[in-house]
Length: 114
Image 1 (cartoon, one colour):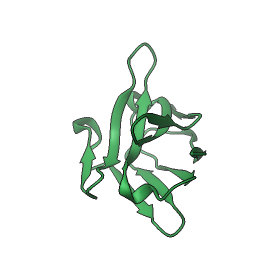
Image 2 (tube, one colour; image 1 turned 90 degrees about the vertical axis):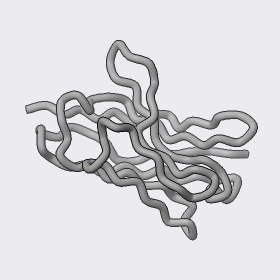
Image 3 (tube, helix red, strand yellow; image 1 turned 90 degrees about the horizontal axis):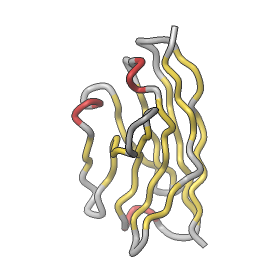
Image 4 (cartoon, helix red, strand yellow; image 1 turned 180 degrees about the vertical axis):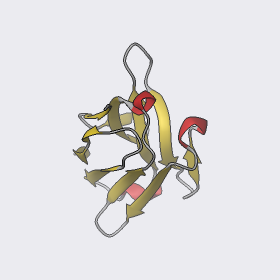
């Protein structure tokens, strides 16, 4: 059974940093596309950053240079380090894994506000 469990998130001031983690169980994630999406208020869910099944990274233009995706393959965990956060980054962040179907974590709230 595939499960994605997220941790991290919370409230941070503009310009601050936060880290998210996603621990995946049930398979070796590094063979599949895995990463992070977010859903901002009133908007559709969108890609933030991911590893492709080939191991390349892919970032949304809005987060390039500020966010970094990384992983611990031994721990089967994917991380998202978010720096220079802006109010527009406020969203629910979801861990994602793509097999023949999509798997999602439960979501974690990130709020950027002074």
